[in-house]
Length: 203
Image 1 (cartoon, rainbow, N blue to C red):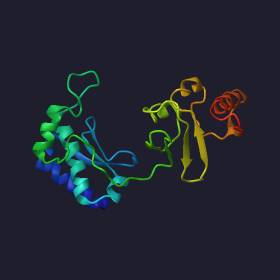
Image 2: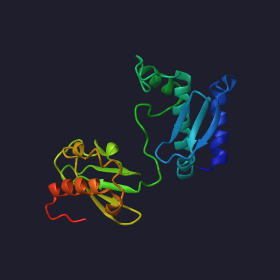
Image 3: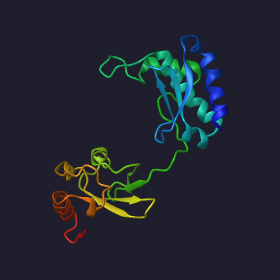
Image 4: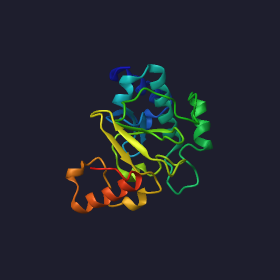
C-alpha cells in the first residue's frame, strides 16, 4: 500500500470513529520493528512507512483500527489497574472491527540484520542490533546451549554465551564491536567468556 492511500484511509477511519473532533490526525514514522503507534500527547495515529509499503490495504486497515481502539480506550499507565490490551480495550477493538484483538497479525517487515537459532530447542530470534541487555531472554527456554548469531550483511558469525553466562559479561555491553575495537580489559573478559564455551576459540 502506498503512503498517500494509507494517510487517506487513516483520516477516513479517524472521522468515522469521531476522533477528528478531539484533534486526532494521521502521522508516519520510520520505525522498522512496529506497525503502528497511538501517541496520546500529539494525538496522532502513527503508521510505520516501512510497514505500509510492504503490506496490503486490509492489513494496514487492521493496524489503524488497532491504534484507534487505543485512542478510544484512553491512556494506560504502567502501574494502573487496566492493561493496554486488557478486557475493556479488547471489547472496544471488537466493536470497531479489529478481527484479532488478542494478537498481533503476521506482517511483511524489514528483515533484521542479525538472527540466531538455538541448537537445543530450535527457537529462532532476530534483532537489528546485538546488545547484550536485549539478548538476555533470547534463549529463555534453554540456558546452557551455545547460540551463534549470523550477520546478514557481512555473513559473519558471532558466537555468544546464553543467559547462564551472560550476567558475567555486563562490561561487554555492545557486542557487535570488533575484537580490535575493544579495550584491553574487554578483550580479556571476552576471551575468557568465549573460551568457557569453546576452549579452542581464538580472536
